[in-house]
Image 1 (cartoon, rainbow, N blue to C red):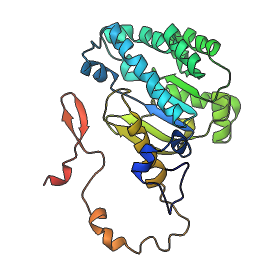
Image 2: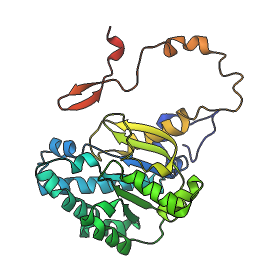
Image 3: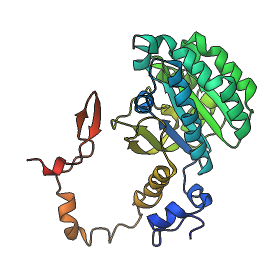
Length: 294
């Protein structure tokens, strides 16, 4: 049984980490996590729920809360989550017609506010300056959740591809920020550690309308292929284990690093390309058979 982070010479096994107490995961979970979750409509469709009905929002909201709750329980202190992207505003049909209403209810309705109160979360939303219908939601969340809390959910909407750029540049000009820490303080009103963990879904892409650029740290990225907020604890623990114990390979003294490189030749000369995929109906999916192709 492990109780905290291990050093490079004796990392826990993955099996031990998966079974370890929450505190062991929290000890190596980065304090700031960006979640860019997609596929909520696929998740609903797989559950037999119409993506054009109010049942879609009712299906997605509790899954969203459960996902955030899981990350907070396992050690995250700040979660940044892009609620809606420009491409969603560009859609047509009933989904687009109901989109703002679903956001308002899902993030600031009576059920959502009760969830936040029960868990003691502070919830803030940005980017609503260009979406007048959501400005009252911003004020409602400020009034209903604490001014300070152990866990903060930073929600944001990006109605255009320039939204986050405009916010960052305006804050930099107004505050005359000269460092990242000063810029974060100007935008969020407090010090928040730069994000080191980003979890998306589907295609391995990062766009400036998804990521609050000011909070970027040395960002380790993961893309799940399970649509929507259906991320279970095993998945989170596997991601954190990889982040904490497999990816942290830097060392100041590299004198012995290449001693066994010849034994690894098949790995480094492999034609494998991370990110190649195939079409699965109307979606992209990783192609795990690429090395078998001519």
